[in-house]
Image (cartoon, rainbow, N blue to C red; front, side):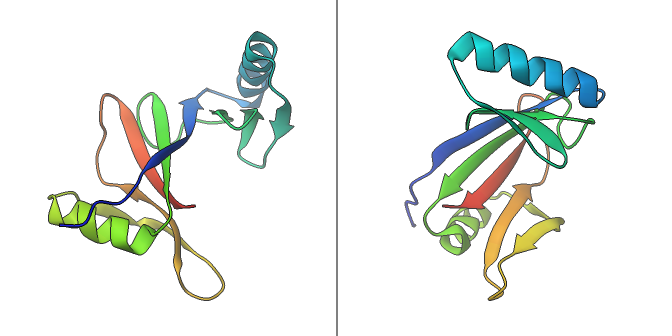
Length: 116
């Protein structure tokens, strides 16, 4: 069995709309001395918090993890009995997997695995 290294990338927090996402990102940025940043589907508070402009996967949001070898990590997690939502898979221009969500929720959160 493989033993991939996983690291926390960020926590995605579902909000109901763009205003709530912006307000939450501003609050978290002020709270933790982080730089706010605008995204297409979300507002960020530094690298740690992604405040979604509309509810997305996971009742509460998502947990994004990163790993240096995403293909091997997917194989390892499948070996452990986890499934993936292939409809969420994103790929680099060279065809390598960029990121993907696991199937299901874990404590109300979806889990997103990303190539480091």
